[in-house]
Image 1 (tube, one colour):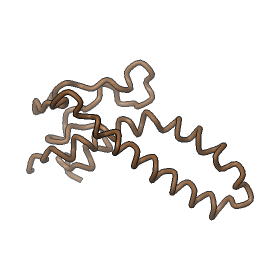
Image 2 (cartoon, one colour):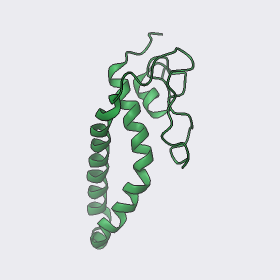
Image 3 (cartoon, one colour):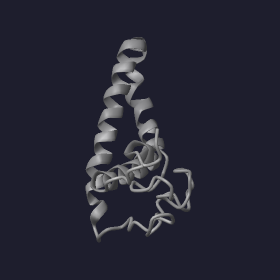
Length: 122
């Protein structure tokens, strides 16, 4: 996988144009003090990571689609492998969604920007 690949940049916290500079300040989505802190520009290619005010409002819809996809997959696994414990589906789903919230937040922002940025050709 090349470093200027959109999927690489989305999953590995990298700039969608160059695939080298970091998107978020911290590597971990679970750093309580800085999980949502983004760089203003890519440290490698200088891409503006905040193109305009309100740009990342569209990432809310991407995040929602991640939640829906996760819930459907989780439900199908639960029905197929834990049918006897189906009463506990919601009891287990809600903590999982809460735990995944910072990860989906960051993933959705990177995916939203990657939709509009063309990667550098290698």
